[in-house]
Length: 329
Image (cartoon, rainbow, N blue to C red; front, side, top):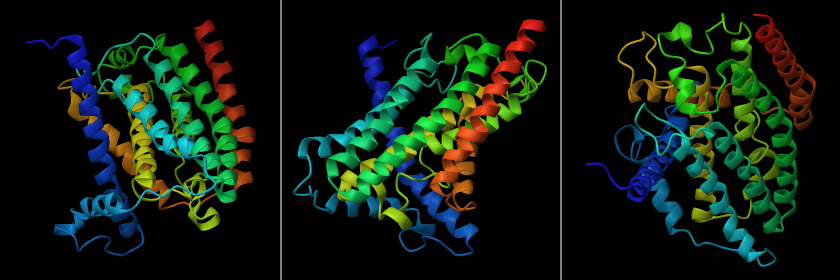
C-alpha cells in the first residue's frame, strides 16, 4: 500500500530527524573513542559497556541545564539561531537519495537545492554570534563569514566541473550514471576526466571548512575564543548547535558519496543497495574524525591563503581544462 504524498513526506521527515538524532549522539561517541585511540588513551568507559551509554548521559545532562539568555542579547534572534542552524541540514538530508527507492523526492535540481539550503547555515551561526552581544562570539562570527565565502568558491567550481561531466543536477541520475563497478565511479573514471581525483580532494577539504571541522574549526576554536560563536549558549541551545555540526557532516559526506563514490552502487556492479551507501558515508565520516585528531588547527590567515591562493586557482584550472577536454574529445 502506497502512502498519500503528504503522509509519505512527513514519514520521511520523521525518519530523517531520527537518523540525525541517533547519528549526533553516537558520532560523538565515535569521535571521543577515535580521539582516545589516536592519543593512546581509553576514552569513555564508565557509562555502559565500552561507554556506549555515554551519549544518553550527555543528553540528560544538557536537558537538565537551564536555558539562559544574556541580559544584553537580542532574545528573539538568540533563541531563533539554533533552529535556523538545524533546519537547513534536515532539508538537505530530505533531498539526499539513500537508495534507488529511498528518498523523499527525486528533484531535477536536487544538487542546487542542497547548496541553496546549505548556505543558510553560515548565516544562522553568524546570527547566533551577533545576537549574543559577546565580543568573542562576534569575532568568531566574522571569521565564519570570511571562511565560508573563501571555501564556497572552490567547492562550487569543482561541483560545476563534475556537472559538466555528468550533465545533470539530479542526484539520482548522477548515481545511476556511475553504475557498473568502481571504475565507473566519478573519482576513478579517468577516461571521462583524469583530473577527478584532484577534484575529490578539493571537495573534501572544502567540506571540512564548510562544516567548521578541525583543522578549520574557526567557528568554535575553543583554545582561542572560549567557544566561538556559541560562547553564550548553554544546555540544549548549545546542544542543537552541536547536533547541527554532525548533521552538516552527514550532508557533506552523503553528497561526497553520491557525487564521487557511486552512491548506493556496489563496487563490483552487483548487489547495490542502501548498505553500500551507508558504508561509503561512514567511511567518509571516519576520515573527518581522523583528520580532526591528526592535524593541528591552522592559523586563520593560513586558512584563507589556502583557499584564495591555492584551491581557487587549482579548481578554476581544472574547470578550464575539463571544458577544453569536453570540447575536443
